[in-house]
Length: 416
Ligand code: SF4
Image (tube, rainbow, N blue to C red; front, side, top):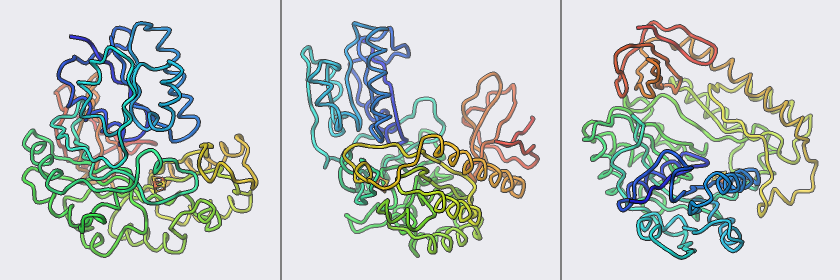
């Protein structure tokens, strides 16, 4: 059998898509060494021009290290740059998002192929196991109807569409009976779930929670305007992970308007305070250095960040993405050095807030352990903070409840 190596770039959705491809691969064996494989499938990311360069650099280095491998481009990059990379011979094959269930057939091609498919498709593949993971990731929807100025995603993943409820529940059932207790709901814009099929995220969550074996549900990134009353009613449920990731992207209304966002700071602060009062740790995405972010705007934005009960952050330094409205903005551009400084200011502030939160919330931490290496096991507690445990016993996949922990700068630690 021929050997296939999978290289995944980008977000959780892409990681899930790799699992979908693996679940559909029957005529090949997977291989952990890209230099010894016959075929390399690149599940690519195209979120910024930098992400495109990383994929191109990987292709060039792979060609040097394994000149005989057939390179197949999948993922968002297939939709953005696949045509060009296929025409110039950089890759042997291109497969679009809708072609993941045909991977077995496509990889058997002896001749170069370009199968981009469409952006209306919904995967029906049931992923029964996740390689190397104790938590199961479930993709509940595809695509996005928002048009944030800096974002290419709607162009390469299509408009928002929900996976059918019975497909999701069937998948959860199978995974729960395979021993998974924690489920992470992912998608391009998770909070839009249900709009197109007369349902809602809250309705889906209630149904998932009543599946036997489901102990904890985590939800991917939500937009502030998507937290409605029906969702708020679920905040006290014991199966809800006590961490929500609310994508604000900025705290300056001027920047939010330039970015064509739908949230405003005054509403964001009310929402985050409400969630925090219900005992939730709160994360956000934040883009620094987007065109238009003057020094005065940044100063105000940072002060506003201080006033928010945030505990986690994914801070991104703005990076231009061709074919987006932001790439055409002529307003003041922020230099790389300044953006880096702002990024550091922001992340160090949230790091300190995270430690304060962990000092106050260090009891009754429910942790699902994974990644055991050299007798060190790691896992996330209900607040999405890392707990590290030393043990000579195999604790991979075990749930523990921790009460006495040492609160370190970036994680909690428990000695068995
Ligand atoms: S919400 Fe905005 S940033 Fe997120 S995928 Fe949609 S367009 Fe992109």
